Length: 56
Image (cartoon, rainbow, N blue to C red):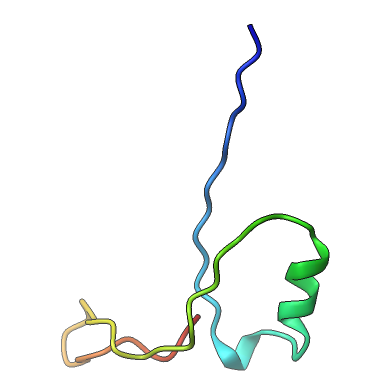
């Protein structure tokens, strides 16, 4: 019996540390994925920091 396996990964992408054509590079991989919009309203667990910095 052959079963399909799936792997799921999560990455945080910060605008200051990704190449300009990052979306095209990911698209060329040919792997289905979802990319969240750039956002900065996630609550932070770091004391003295209310929100996390902007990320995808």
